Each structure stands twice: as C-alpha cells, then as structure tokens.
Length: 175
Image (tube, rainbow, N blue to C red):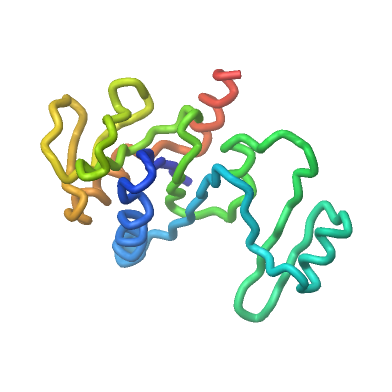
C-alpha cells in the first residue's frame, strides 16, 4: 500500500482535485482509499437514529451495516487523536491511500495551490512537499503540474507516493 498526501489552504481545490483523480486512478485499475482530517467536530451519524443513540449512551464503537455499506464509528471519549499510521492500519489494503490533511505528519505531500485564494505557498516551509499542483507558474525545483491536467497530477501523486511502512517509520522517528 502506498501513501501520498494533498496539502494546501482551505479553498485551494484539494477535494475538487481528488474527486477528479479517483476516477482516473480507478480507470488505471488502482484501488484507492482516502483519509480526510477534519479540523472541527463532525458527525457522520444522524441524531435520533439507533446508532446515534448507542454512541450517545456511551458505546466506544458502533458498527452499522447494510447490504450497501458498513461504517464503524469510534468515539475517542477524551483519548488523544490517533496519528496517521494508526488510521492507515485500520484501512483495508488498497493500491493507494490519499491523505487530505494531517500536514504535521511526515508523509510526502503534493501541495495544491490556487492563486485566486491569495494564500502563500506551503512548500518552502514543509520539507514533506514533493510537488505542486497549481494554476500558476511557481519558481521551484519541485515538479509542478497544472490543476486541470489530471493525467499529469495522477502521475505526480503516484511517483511521490511512499510505502505504508516508510510512513510508519518516519512517524516513529518523529516522536
């Protein structure tokens, strides 16, 4: 399993790019999973439904299953937020995991930058950035691709992706 991140300011187009890349990777025969970091409290459950009521009652985990999908909700209940390697280990094996967020983790990342956002580039200060997907010319030695060139962006992500074991080793070394 290989891992690559997408990093960038809110509004840069990370999710838009990723939703265009996933079908491209699928067409290449690759199985792709995504880990998305949320910076605020979020809920995937519906208040009032049985699974929500189970969590509210204090269950540590609630697994909901149907003939279409299953979802596991794990309540931290005050425990520390899990690090990226722990979350990666919970995924089923796939060819590529794209991580959106977790910018403080030591995995390689592709920066997504949109000039209309008016935000500075991240790459000068983040040694984990291995390339840039942007809508403007950027002065750098890093490989760059245009945000709308999905084939080039996919190729850049695949070249920069690192093995899961290397992500774990870098994370352990960081502690």
